Image (cartoon, rainbow, N blue to C red; front, side, top):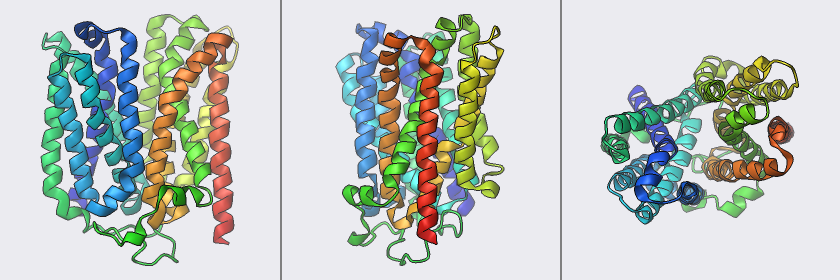
Length: 406
């Protein structure tokens, strides 16, 4: 039963990543077919991000009411329905309409699944599961490429992935009875000893007092620190993904083909690094993964910035930054029940998801505005500032948690 549910969750994480690259990979063709400017992609992604942030914040209340299995199945179903809606859309306003359930479904399932895994499974699974998300995000551009090269059109890519999501929804609906039968782990990720069974209940209909309102969660000591750290990390990752190749070409004079290849290595480093981190995550712990990850990204930023006659170190630095990013996201999520208790973890993870999407949505355009004034040379410095901010906040949280446990 444990292995069966774990396998379903692995497939669900691949499914979470599948839609995330579709808009970006298909937009060069989509905007022409729809007769809208290229910049309209920003409108679409903002609608999706807005829905994701809202549903992340509401995820804890909804999941306590209906259970994580139901929320996961319904959320994946909403995402699948939105993708099918995309596949039948021939007007931009229709995409905007379907983007609403797209974002709402993505945020709810992200927070619910991450909390469930943090409470019920070891750190290695959190890393491998997020590696599976990267696998899904890497597969969808190939599906889009296949659909376009076979003259099926971009609609077919959305149809294919929408059907896959529909099949997964059916599997998740069947698996609902399994979710309440897996016991929370003891040790890393377990609730503090002073929490009562009611407070740590994973039952679909937990007591009303188990709900943690947003304002109450934000008042818990250390929550603001981890939100800033998570915001900084996600801002760093998304900024690097969007601007790395442009920086290498514009500021370092690297040819476009090489820059694109090494920019993709950043994403491959994130995905491969998460699978690699899973093999030793249980031994070294979440704190070391977060600390080491930020430190490695910092080393990468320094290598990118070095004004040498060769670009080799800059390219190596970009790959190292990707490897450094790999364990930070899963480790922050997995450490939440330990730092704040299982009673609070879902509410806090929901807010973390909102902070993550806020950072990844708004900071890359902010960097674009800053670099328009300063020049793209500021790219590694911008990354370094986010590294320092994230590391400083996470270390302050560690000291706070240590004092609380004394």
